[in-house]
Image (cartoon, rainbow, N blue to C red):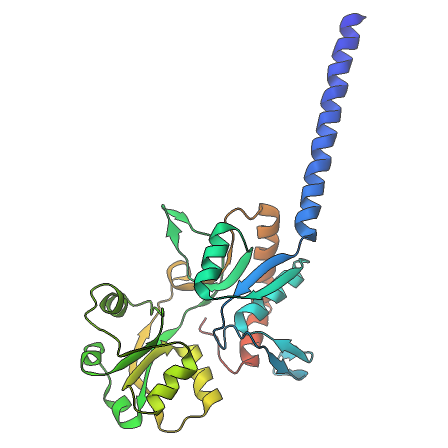
Amino acid sequence: MTLYRTLLGHRCTLMLTFALASTLISYQSYAESDRALRIAFNDFPPYAIQKGHNFEAYSGQGCHHKAHTGFGIDPDFLISVLEHAGLSYELLFLPYSRVKLMLHKGAIDASAGFFYVEEDNQPKYRYIFYDIGGETIFYAKRKQAEKLTELEQLFSLKLAIVRGDTFHNKDLDSWIYESKRLKPFLFANSYEQLFRQLEADRVDVIALNNVVGGYMMKTLNIPGIKASPLRLTYGENPKADGIHIAMRKDTTDNIFERVDTSAKILIEQGIFKCIQAKYGVLSNH
């Protein structure tokens, strides 16, 4: 009888431990879902717009939206994904270097518009692919633009880029940041400044992403500036050249899988392309 009671006691203890563990797991899962995820971006129109952009209600050509304030292509898409996944969020705007540092340290939960990066042969973040980077476009005044066809021609021109910009081209990036063979005449603090310097003839040529370039040309409406024939493609490999949602490395499987599933559904439904269309640009993918 004593042995039976001892075994019964052990069994009850195990059952209670299992029940408590199950309850804790359920509570943790609930707590993860209930906590607002902190998402952060840097001001990078039209990909991310800190001041916001007011949209009127629209319905047509397979896309529709209510009147609302948009914060750029990448925040709008990530917000749509989180809402579809039933997750709440807090939106922050910070300098790009701080966004990367805080995501790496776990001070924020996610961002978007990231290229895939490895650290110690492991993904730096948890990634969800949703777009392809596109092209680097070189803009110049009309007569100069028509003549610009080779990358080596940049050595004889006053080149301006936005501070910290990279171009997904090993030659151009290496010339600017590693070998220093090509020293930009100007590092602008914003894309508007980049175009204004070209408009004022302080520089000969500027380099930037095609989506940003198209948006700025439409927004600023500067006559006399034209895209040159010289274009550098980012490539078409989703892992190496793709644009991703980046989530902190310790994101739980429960949260990551919900975000991943929702992103795939919204892409399949054409929501991402509709978001791009709101801002007047076309998808690269």
